[in-house]
Image 1 (spheres, rainbow, N blue to C red):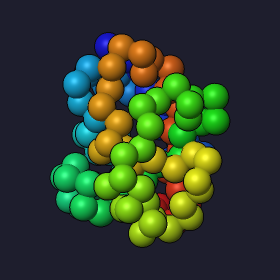
Image 2: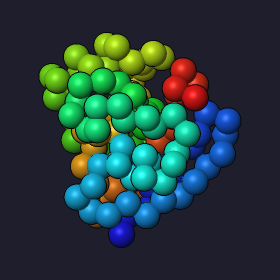
Image 3: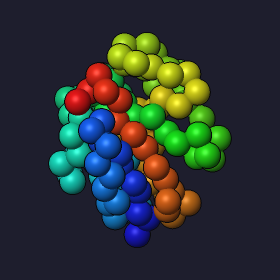
Image 4: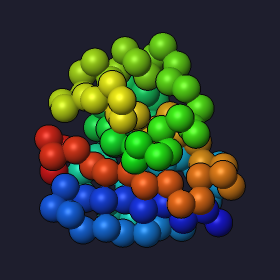
Length: 107
């Protein structure tokens, strides 16, 4: 099972086993990661699962689609070089070692 590191705003780092087929949002929400609220339940209709992807990982992930781009416009602290919606990142075995940080604005 891929292990993803979630870094909460306060700096606490937690490594979570996330099943293949789940999303980064589901892994964080289910583990109680502070700041991953997931108000829309993963429908890409809010930005409450916004995370910053570690720069070493950003280009290794599938590209953003237009709906995600539109929702990221509403994400406080959006960074064009690191921001993703966790609900749009479906976990594959290749996600093992992924590191994401929850933005300060979501804490």
